[in-house]
Length: 131
Image (cartoon, rainbow, N blue to C red; front, top):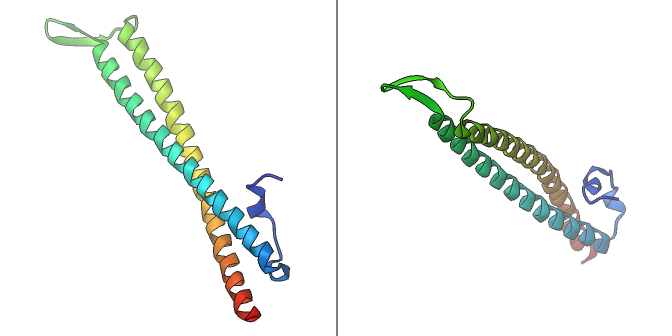
């Protein structure tokens, strides 16, 4: 069973012992940290994609042809044009992968936090009732 499937399961927490609740809480906190790391990695991809996009725009400007200080168009046979196309492709890939990974990790973290709150409440109730 994958770690992310634990959140999707319907567990009867009332029937679990305090030790089992502690283990579930520990696992959920570890998974929350892992999803946080994935979010941060995804944001790095988004930033790198933005930098690639800016580089693509700069190379596209370099591929503009001028005659007598008049812009006549973009030269599609120039090296800066090909570099700009490559940068645009890299930027699109990095931005899309980064955004998708960020949104998936964010939704998993949201579900994990709800489960952590539920388990923590049950743990505190069991600790009070056992004393």
